[in-house]
Length: 168
Image (cartoon, rainbow, N blue to C red):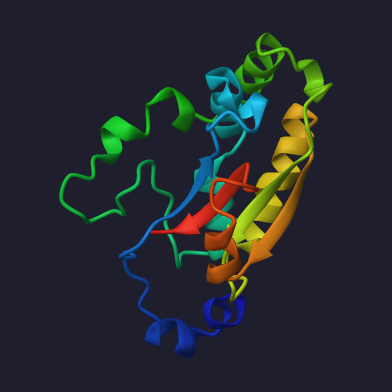
């Protein structure tokens, strides 16, 4: 992407457009991963991520942040409403307070979970690494990244995937 953007000829031939899919993160709330059953924890994890800046830095105009399951341009997508929902508002201080309220001040005692990434080509790995770094920086928690292929991911669904990132 950087090579294309730096070259005026290639950039003129490049036509980023709205994607027809959405990459999203989910949390296993089936009771197996106790901390994730707490809404304050999940909201804290979301509020510690600056979606617009991360997507802009990593995908450099070839992807767009979205604030719901539908990608921009789909019927029913309403960014103006979704962007202001509590989990979508970037606020690391509020995230820290929510995590503390949930019993994990500065991340102390928070389990080290895995973030499963259903992404065999590695396209999402830089984004997940950035999220991993923000959680460490803002909340003091650590997650281990676990990129997997579709079959491995699916065979472990709801069993071993506390946090997951997939493409819809």
